[in-house]
Image 1: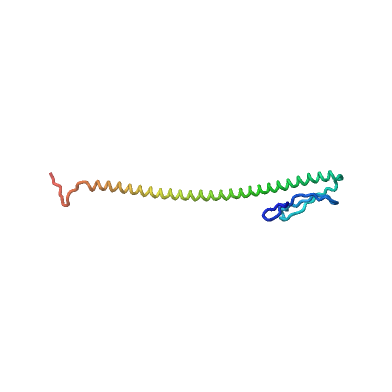
Image 2: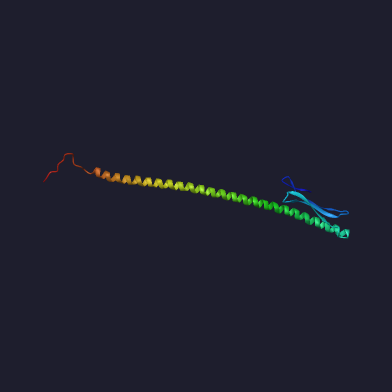
Length: 150
């Protein structure tokens, strides 16, 4: 049964082809060309047919397991790569947010500093006005008053 990945065949499982040219054949995708390539393992060198069949069945089973496992490993690796990329993007976003919040807090500190300075100035002016008010409340002589000499 061919295995598809995103519209492309990823591999075709191994099968036994008995006959004059007894062999096991399967197809896998070449990562350089992204095309399926046929792999063929000839088993004619094994003289006894029963041994040849047993070897072929074992070979087909092992190849198919490895192809399936490799496919799973590639999927896990691709998920890991996607996860790493997502983590990197999230880190960038967090750094941006941290800088943004820091900027807001520093602006707030600046506003607080400005407000504090203005409040201190108002407090100083009120203190001056109170001291001036004491001078104004002090009884004063009338205009044209001349002190008497006793």
